[in-house]
Length: 289
Image (cartoon, rainbow, N blue to C red; front, side):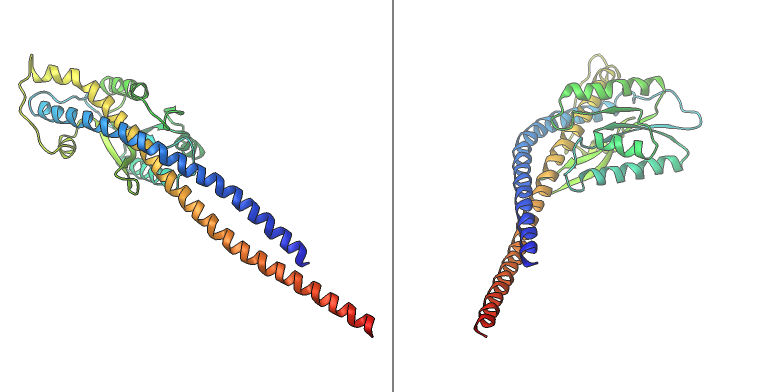
């Protein structure tokens, strides 16, 4: 009986050690990807913040971009950015919870909400709840590029000006540090001047030629594309950081479990040896008798 128990424990130890190698490898991969992702994010933030600075100055001088006047129900487009893969802790869960909250808030005001998903996790989540995403983009969250941002945002901006949607909002994860990422939302169109002002520390003076409104109409696509690209980079960096932490925790848990199983294995082995000794002693006494 002890021998069977020992074999089971040893098989579990072998299995956990194998899993530990996988989680450790995934931790190292995520860790290496964070460095590159952080560099890309920093460069993108510099560009996006400068555009935000210009846009704020423009919105104080020119005409605000708007879709045709809304009569009745307002149409909202939520762009929900998750990952394609799991094993990233609460990363996807936090985003999807926030997306549900935003959707419910708009619907409670009798608005119509359409969902655009980025990542398999968001697409699967909404389809499982019988909500068919208006559009789905997959295979870009690991290492997004500017072409991905154009692919997502260009048709949405056109819909905004055509009056097919009255507001475009992104739900994504903002990367603050390797240990801190925050699920949040940002309105892309129409512009929220106060929100833009918070993204920069100071605004310089500009002289616009031919006019602020004309410059604004030309800069809007650049700003919206930069905003979605920055959101994609934030989400990607946050995903790698979340996966690194999750895999590190899994590796540490595996190490602790191996220690526990090793103690159990030793105890089972000792019990087996004790049983064997007892049987030998008992057999010797029987022969002596």
